[in-house]
Image: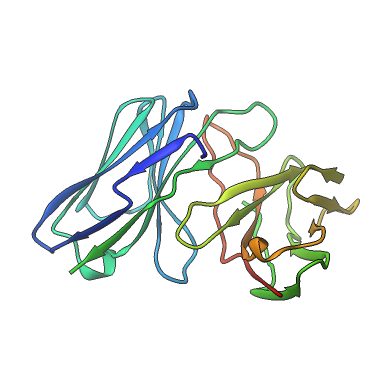
Length: 115
Length: 112
């Protein structure tokens, strides 16, 4: 148990569907992240929120829309996805550090399949 | 951000010590070295972090030579449950969040 909970664990959706992934952290952290991990590929950072403000958007297509209503919750809204978007989507959180790199705490991820 | 190079894969047997080396020739003065472990279909988990010399915790040891151009993650007496991907990240976060990039990592397979 990492203190970061993601739902659902598995999701199958068609290309015309709209769905949302949810992430909740119980660690009191100020930063939250969305990563994408395709099969046999490294993690790709998608979005970063710091103090509920989006600070990173790594050229992610507009069919992925993040939302951070407060520092404990993070959503990823999905619409008109493509089969190549099938991947493991991971949420993480961290607390700003002063002299060392902030440790990332990851959830278990949502395994997404787009048909 | 410093570029890292680690072996793509390694094999070991239960009870052996495993050492995974990461090269980071262009590490900056203020950079830290951090290692994560990832099991299939799960998020990575922080293992250990260090700046120089040696760091040890209940899970692993991290050895960093004086020039800091490489680091070695040491896992004592591995078991089958240590089969995972291990990532070496080098850099210094700032601005209130972690900007470090995950590479391909090292796939460790532990055999009976």
